[in-house]
Length: 365
Image (cartoon, rainbow, N blue to C red; front, side, top):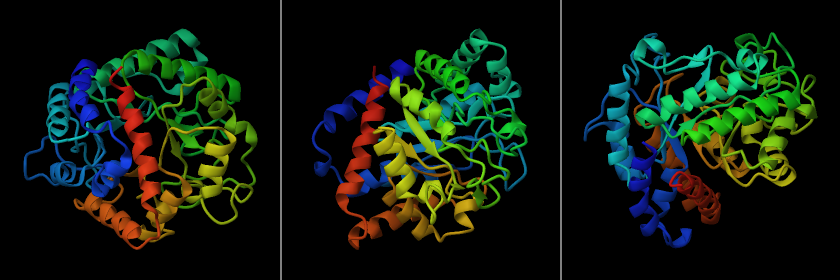
């Protein structure tokens, strides 16, 4: 599939080799959105196909379980079905899609044995068992993904296991270690193996979710009294070694970093800390904008504006915690209105667009 993606990417690279200001604004906005959808297959009339074709949607995320319906009927049924679904989606894209999935291992893996894929241990187990096991699991995950057309894994989790009873991280074994340097090392090995299989990685959840006592899926999570700068160590190490393809923000609130906004919506955290202090100039993606910490606390237009002003390049709407088949259309319209009204300058859109294109171009290698 890596070679297929390179062939698909070539005409787009030739077409878009000029400056961002020559590109269509709607197409640039579309690249800043990633959305989930329902269905094992798509056709010309599918809403997600129209979003890709007409709005230039930049990415999609696939799930096996539909949270609202409470069933395993979402996007993943078998390897053959997933490969055809991704191929059909890519065929509609003028700029090749980022096709993402959460495949960490352990309790968080959408490609399961019952669908014909290999399963791997949780991060905590693979790291505890040594580097060879991390390397083996990482390559197995990467190979599974690339074999059916995924080019982005929302992994590894680089949250340090500060609180083993954290409901979203420690309790699920999603953290590699309670040692920041050990976390960085195991995550780096995992990333290397994804790259060997031709898959991009995404470090999550910045600036660190491992000390949280609550789950940001359900509501605002405050880590002011539990977070420490040691949780930045994996990011610093992986950015410094050139292994950070993409970084996902956390919907956590930390008054020591920003007394007003959670990390995803904070310019102090995303631009000031991640970009300026840690030196990351790659793609920043938000965690799911439908999660309670954002959706329940902010209106959609305000959340979109704040995330972009903070420095996020891609806004993720998993469309699974809640469902709206027009979510990409609505989010696109919000961003366009913000630009047309002069609230967000076009140059800000161009900056994110250029980062996203650089990331996609790296897949042709």
